[in-house]
Length: 249
Image (tube, rainbow, N blue to C red):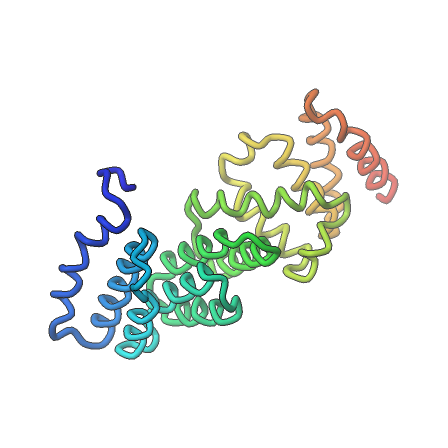
């Protein structure tokens, strides 16, 4: 329910008439935008149980009106992942949405939400890939998007070991890209202070995996100072990392 007490379907019911009226005489990108948002409204109603509706039909109709429409492509990619269909096809639609040059922030927002909804092994690698692409493209990320990226990195902290991350992520991004994206996401955010030890130890491991032994050594030493009673079990691993890196200098 929304803050006004309306269900998703109720929210959709307030906008469908407006969108439908706007379609009269609309052409090109304008028509594509309206049809895509009509499909999104139908998705809300579909989620409320009106399963006779087909949001994808509106998205595809929008693409007939405007082949590069960013809303239609992004929403169709979201729909495909929501229904556990082809990740490759969804990625193609997200790429087409971004290629339009319009509404990049919205497209990334929906892309992250779509992959965050997945509950299989493709979730974390794709979230990290999207974040890396955003960094390279000079895009911004909002706090909600940043929150979605903490768990993939935390999973690396839990299953990885000093010097590398878990094997299932190794082929997704290079260690250097994982480090650069981690810094881009979190280094100037509240995560540095709020996560404390967890932020620093993950940074140290990423720095070591990327071959930046000087920075990694400094981060491990900082992490050792942050390792309160709740993290005493990790002190031995940190001590070993410090000895290993210090002896290699």
